[in-house]
Image (cartoon, rainbow, N blue to C red):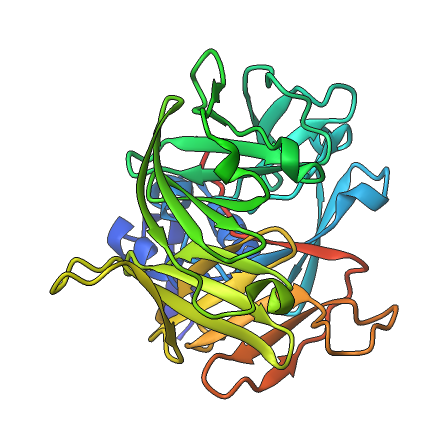
Length: 359
């Protein structure tokens, strides 16, 4: 018996086969467990590169603009844990409106609003971009990956809609490209999807889809508003590409929550592009914060309910309170039933997809 126990104690866990380590690592759906797994020894670390990070439930970022603290706070909704991560690079940065993309957020320098960068708040890795031709204070900035896997930064004026200027930049390029757009693109919400610009007119809800390449523009098609009285009902909306490649339009309905529409590009039997209302998006979930939206496949993550919308901003129809204005909620797209979640953060502002890979 002593010999058997001695054999177990002397087992070298570093000699586990790489394929076995990979199987184990794929079950580590909490990023802290994945990091701890990799630091056990060199063999475990080399067998599980950061590029193989299992799909993570998005973390919630506490808005850093209200605090001079160089540490960023994150909350894991699925594991009910709070993480504090040193992020000295974020101390002199503003996080303007714009969704995160693959763990990177577009940031502005507080000292010079022409200086734009991409920052991974988990790794502190930063990608510097050329000086922006327009001062970006109070501007929207969105970062996305195009179909070639390259990051594209799009920014435009938020407060002065009648003087909107849109500029586009690919990291690695030496300059920004100013989009040559006419007056019809003023006073619009702008989204960058499928390497194209989707511009929703704020007064009518009409969507213009424009191809943009290094500053050159070409109008592809126009999509009518999904309903009448758009300006009276519009409280906010988001355009997002789902995991199937379809474009979804998520509309903030003032009465009960969110309505979802799918883009039908037409061309079948001579039909024109239009928005089609849907009550089921399949095995998918939409994540929305005050800045943007993205879609995840519910089957890849435990805890995510399909055909749902997870969002952080308080619905307008509820009475605001100091403790509930920004709190995570889930809405069933079909039934519109809402579910609240506890959150210890004071100003939860962004869903962040954890990413340890350096671009």
